[in-house]
Image (tube, rainbow, N blue to C red; front, side, top):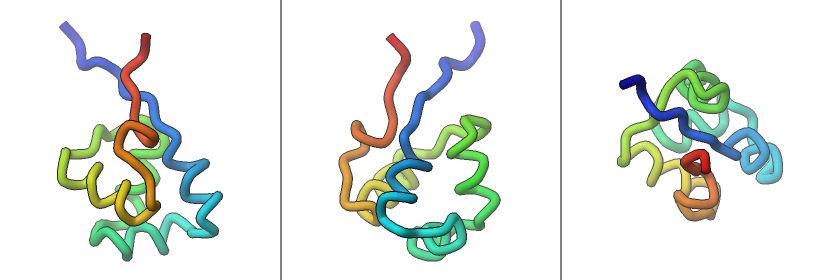
Length: 69
């Protein structure tokens, strides 16, 4: 069985907050490349990173990440 894809609204939430990928990366302690790969669905974030992203964007994890129907 392959990995279940994870849908995300990270790019839209980040843009709505007026942050660049680099800004968000700095807020959560990762590289800009990590933010890029999460936004593009290449990398599934750890629970800790998902929680940090949600906190940085004043959102819930569920608002940022969804399993496909």
